[in-house]
Image (cartoon, rainbow, N blue to C red):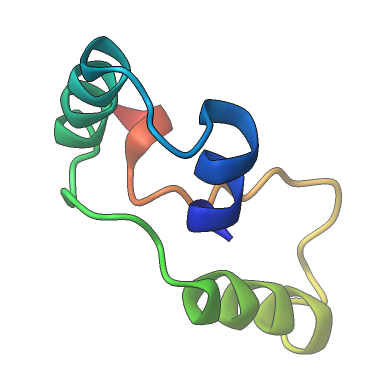
Length: 68
C-alpha cells in the first residue's frame, strides 16, 4: 500500500527534498519502521472479536508516532 501511495502521490521519481523529508519523518517513529498490514489487521480483529468492553475508543496503530 505504501509503494502504491508513493507512486500515486509523489510520482515515479520523487525529488531529493521529498525523499529527505520522508527519511526524517520515518526517523521520528519510535519503533523506526512502518507498520505491517498484518499488525493493523490483528488490532482490528481483536477489537471486533475480543474487546467487548471497549466502546468509542480511538486506537492508533502507528508504532508510537502519535505518542511521541
